[in-house]
Image (cartoon, rainbow, N blue to C red; front, top):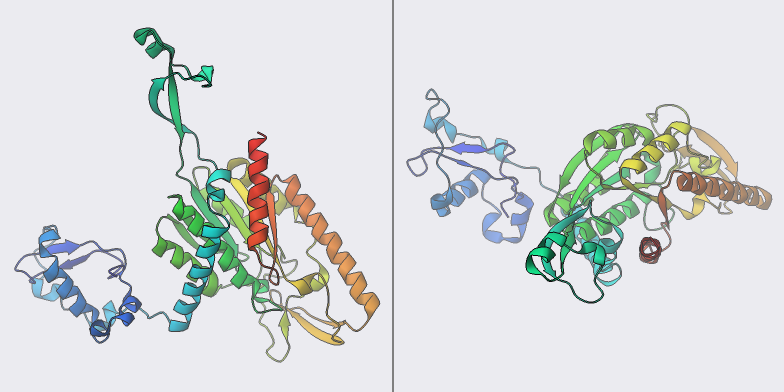
Length: 407
């Protein structure tokens, strides 16, 4: 409930005839909507009652300056303490994703995340007596000599990992021919992986990128943090509309000092011209024209950045696509506008030969993209907005587990 009061620490005075500092991270006002007695209170009143109820647990603080009157410390306008309310529709959407992905994590992927992503090393746990079948290489010869009986060292895997979600929020992610856009599917995949991570007590971080780094959330633990990650992936409004994966990976290399699981969630429709800042024309239907001109091979700098990042981190690429990015519907002549560059083309989808040629070209481009990802050593998960993703995630974890067991 008390998740956010103010960004910095709040210093209060003259409440209980002494001064103290409250250290509170976040105060989620929308959480009070379900409690009728709290709906019409100002944050200041809630803060006062909180202080009175927990006065014995608040640590004393020395006044930093004697020139500040204690009466002025609490004269904070209500507007300064108000936190923007999250619309109920957004909360409902986040809650739906949480329920749906939690079920998948529990029923389909239970334990698989833990088994396929290894920790950074092994930590010594204890020494115990040797038993038939134990690895002789684990014998502790010093203890064995003292006890005149073989003992072995027991190790446990260092499990605390960092999961960094690198999510593409460029303009092409808003495209979707069914009930779900690519951006919404990206949020669900991020949710599945994030909830799997926190169940294993791992940290989760988020990097949103277009043709620049739009937002970075440092890795943390906890359900509340994961819900924030979901909200940002779903509803963050990027400043740019293009795609530059190489720049995002360079940023990851700077902010992650240790090995991490780096999951890139993108449609890999990279901007080819312009900066991606063109304004869409409202009178024309908005769609991803990059689907009409093909994904194409990754640029050299992007391929190099992927290979270098994968040397340091465990990189997994989640390729999200839509059905109509690989096959065209027979709808006659269409005017399509690129969601990233603003480029407009006219396309005749009524011709069977044109649709067949387009499908063949797209299949070739997809195969080339998959080849380049393999050459960079990056594992890939192929997903589509019109196909349930649980089975594809399950197959990925199973294949990775088999490869790990083979050594």
